[in-house]
Length: 386
Image (cartoon, rainbow, N blue to C red):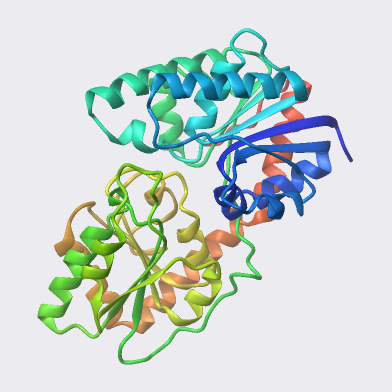
């Protein structure tokens, strides 16, 4: 039953909205008479409209740190908010959170959702520019969360601790989500293969913070040892990210029978019907990687690094194997171990799927979002367990 007239959702890109936030939009179309999605179009806005949402094209330009460009975007967003007059403004990811917060400094909506999906470049980089931008971003978030009608959504406790250390005081107005939510029927448990040459798949954007270059260094070690394992890279380059790896570099790295660059795929479930091991050697903090949850739901064994987000889901030797970030040698050892032990792969995969079913499905996430909305509208505190 609808409890709101209008919710305005601001997200960086239409493809990101579709890949991660269909459960959110589905539930919002049930709790609001109208849902408006403000995002940058890459040609897929019609797919968002098919979910029952109205769309507005706005280029958030994730790679820009140009103050004049950002100011123009804030003005455009302020005009959109004045025209739409939503009951709730739902801001997803760092750029919309910061620019949306600035757009509402003098005329805030009744309610604002700050939806963190990971802290990204601002938390990772220690450059002078990044430090300045980080402090400015935290200042905006502090201002937004001082409003009694605001609510914070996060995906792991370490991101919450980072924000609280920066003075972003949500108190009990916070909900911990199980990532973006996984459909356990779409990502059904796959049988464990006993084939002589298993496949380890990396499914993520081709950017350095995800550690794809570390994975290729580990692949060199495996090749030198003649370990029977094929590594596949599934994902696109990300031109909007300053840490993007060029496609020419990817092709040069993945140029043999033991490693293949597969490019972008929309059918990730099909990847896990063939691949045996998920690997994400992230150098730094994640939110709650959707690709990790998809592989886990498919009962695939996983290897991740000991970074926020990844270690929140994966306990070493229980849901998967955890290795130090940036350590190609340790990553090669973990890959070698899983490549040669299908019983271990089966055990880890089964435990990982059980964890997804216990709190990371689309239904879990949709229900938690609706509870957060109802608590926010009623002025109640959450039952925070983090």
